[in-house]
Length: 324
Image 1 (cartoon, helix red, strand yellow):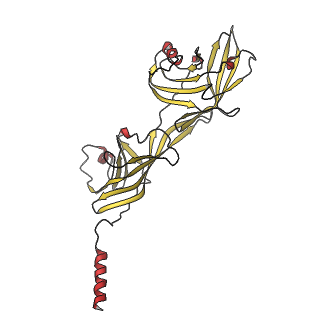
Image 2: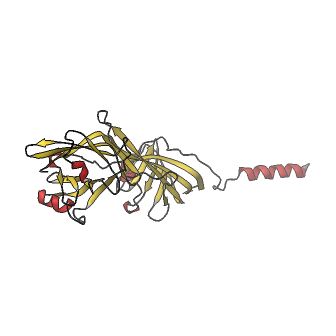
């Protein structure tokens, strides 16, 4: 009987011991708004904070959609860190972003991730023009999840197979599409383009089908399809402006596209489908001794990488004057 009691006492004693490694504390930031300062992405939740530091060169949050089941994966370690802190009061952005940080509140506990991966899955968030049907990407939503993350904390280690940090948004680049219909021009190499003087953007139809400018059947709409070979529709947003009409011609009419100005955004229209999408519609009428070609783009979708946007049901590209 004494042996049995002794064994029970020993079991109770062992059960009461805590080596720290087995202590599990649940933290949850999934529903908290994400903010940022510089290279730091952070969340504040009551008396707690969690933040991620990822250098810009890692390009963790590009304005681009990730492929299905293929998130961006960034290993934790080195110059990539994940930190959790508990404070004796509610922290503010200054506790994360300021150097040096404020004295109060005081951090009472800190966990530092020693390994694991940061997985980032991105989608585009759209706004829609109810009149034209056009869609605009207003922002990109990046969903951040930690995988197999190991935290080193005062009481030992804590491991999460999957920990949802939540959504972080970046603002999409504004594409002006601010074209004057009367600025439309045709190069001798069959490049049709519209670009404002001192503008930072241009839209072109490369290898334009000249049959669409036929002067027979005046007043009757002629239709062509956008494709990667004929009637290739391209939108460029530059980092600097083409300064005058001469430089516009030099750029768009060149046999080889110049390197300057650098391109900030390049979008190419998807191939058209007969009577459905990606349609170029040209209506020709007389204009004095010449002809006026009014050109519309119908149901066009532009694409850059995995990102797309719908240009609109019927958008006027411009009015082209020719003498024959």
